[in-house]
Structure formats: structure tokens, C-alpha cells
Image (cartoon, rainbow, N blue to C red; front, side, top):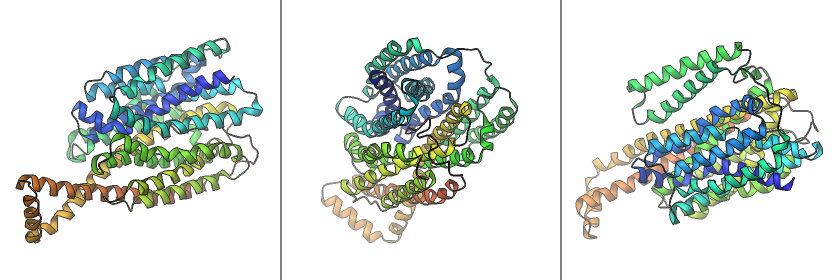
Length: 504
């Protein structure tokens, strides 16, 4: 039982780690393949979108191949795609490999929970999932730190190569322990039209968000076409899935009040959270002079409180009101982002560390209570489909949050840069005085102008990051209203739900 838990947790750890380990390595990867750091965020969003598309297929694939075979196959393919990511020589090649990695990673987290629950008696299910939840929270803590150290001391491809021994070990142990406990296999029709429409609208929307800032948004025909494809395919997708007998995504679940408002609150909040998680290391490394390792050290403590408090939350979520727990989490998230909105170019390491540590408490009270609210009141046979759909919406929102945050950051920085340079045109004496001082320090006029522009950029991008932080804080406060549109589950209704971890 213990060995099985370790192997399943290793696979989950590896999966979740891969969604955060690349965050601090983006500037290094971008420099290596010759693109801007903002273009480099495709490495993160491509994995997230592909993962979101494959998650809803877990139920159908499990019935078609069996849970043990599918899980083992997913882990081995994840190892292969990780190895290929390390060999990438261009952004296009890396993004293609990350898409493949995201697609094969989809079933890993839901199936690790399924196999884990099959190993423990029902009375210990809550404790088992709380321990599993801790594993999913350790990975985001270790991710930035490990990714930063590897990038600075070895090279960025090794953030992917380290998956190879871990994945082979996890797959080997899992197959050895669980091969005789295969689930029932039966052939079911797959909704190919629904799946095609799903890929089309999610892919078009993500491409539109990622390419918009480069192509000047709707001034570009390409963006207009992508928007039309996303909008039309989404509308057809809704109609098709609501009338299909075996839909790839069971949208009828949104008829339930708790599922609709719970999934919406969880997804929007996760999009805000993940957008800020990606923005922080970009700002620290590009404009604050942090190395990948020091950025990892500044962000790693986010999981300390999360690791300590998750077992408590897992135990008490069936006794306390999950709505109050989630409300507390949103208030803490808003507080953390408000603290970050006061960052300046002079902000030191400790000032960055304090809100990061506090954020860990919000993470613990965020995922489990909101997942409990979302899945409450559903019959047991609908829980896997509901968990898959809420995961799909959440992961898609996370990928979109990344694109929106980086796009807004660039546009706000351009605005602040313009505002900061405006006074200089009317104060030639101040500008010439600064140039004279830099010339006397040994810089040429061109070098001095570059230096002044760099100082303005640091201010502009810091103020832009502050704008994102304060805007996100306000949205977290507004999202509290959505939580209270759900009904409280019956107390002592049965501990931690499937998908309790949710830190991916």
C-alpha cells in the first residue's frame, strides 16, 4: 500500500512539477531559442491548453483501455515527450513537444486518485487524498527552486530530462503493484465531432490570446479569423454537446447550481492565480536583476503553509462550511496581491518573500473547499465526469490567465513608459544634466541614453506589474459573491472529494 502510494505520488509530483518548473526558466529558454521572454511563455500555455483538452477524455480512455494500462502508458509517454522537450532546438519544436507532453499528461492526475482510492479502505479515503494533496502542493514549491538551480548551474533541458528516471521508476512500480487490479474494459463510441470542436475553439482562442499582442489585436486579419473560428466553433460545440448521446464533455452538469457557480469561481480564481504565478518570475528576472535560482528562492515558500494546512483542511472540510473557507482564501489572495501592488524597483528580497509565504495559506483553503462545493450533491456515477469537466475549465482558465496577464503587462508597461518620458520633452535641462553626469562616468551619449531608457523601462514594467496585482486583488474580492451563490453541502457528508488536490 505504501509503495503504491509512493509510486502514484511520484507520477503526480512529476506532472505538477512540470507545470511550474519551467516558469523561472522562461528567460533562459527564450534566449537560447532566440525569442522574447513573453513569446517564451508559450512553453507554459501550450502545455496547459493541451492538458486541458485531454483531461475530459480520461473517462472514455479508462473504459477503453483500463485504468492501470492507461496510467502506465501515460507515464511512459510523458517520459518520452519530456526527453524530446530537452532536445528542442527552436521554440516551435519545444512548443510541439510541450503540446504532446500536455496531451499524454491529462489522465495521470485523475487516474492516480482512482488507483490510490482503490488501495485504501473507505474510512481512510479522506486521509489518503489529503496526503496525495500535499504531494501536489510540494511540487509547486520545489518547481521554481529546482528549475532555477538547474537553469543556472546545468542547463534548461535538464528540467525535462529529470522526468526520465522518475517516470520510469513510477511506471515500473505502479505496473508491478496494480497490474492484477485492472478496471473493467468496454468499448464506447467516442464523440469525434465534439472532440474536434473542442480542440478547434480552445486552440483558436489560445492562439488569439498569445499572438494578439504581437499582431496588434483586431488590426490583424489573422486575429480576426482566429476570433471568428473560436466563437463559431464554441457555439457549435455547445449545441452539439448538449444534444449528443455520448458527449466528450457533459455540459448538462452546469444545470446544477453548485457545479455551475463552484466551477466558475474555481476557474476564474485559478486563472488569476496562475497568471500572477507566471508574471512574478518574469518581472524578477527581467527587471529586478534576479537569477533563475534567486527567483526560485523568492517564490518557493508559497507552499510552506499550503503543505502544513492541507491535511487540516482535508479533515475539516466536511465539518466546516466550505463557503467560509473559500471566502477566507479569496480575502488572503486579495491581501497578498494588494501587498504586491506596492512593489517598486527598490523592493528587497524579504518584501517579496512575505506575501509569497502568506499566499500558501490561501492555497490550502482554496482548492479543496471549492472542489467540495463544486462536486457536492452529485450522484457517485457523475463524479468522474464532473471532476474531469471542472479540471478542464480550470486548466483552460489557467492557460488563458497566463496569456491575459502577460499581454496586459506589456500594454500597461508601454503606457507607463510613455507617461514617464513625457515630462522629459519639457525638461531638457534635467535630461541633459543626467546625460552629462553619465558622460563624466565614462559612458558615451548613446550608452547613456540606453542606460536612461533601461531605468525608465524598469519603472514602467514594475508599475505595470503593480497594475496587474491590484486589478487581480479587486477581482478576487468580487469573486466572493459567486461562492455564496452555492448551497452548503450537508455537514459530515463524506470527507475529501475526488480531485482534492487540484494544485495542478
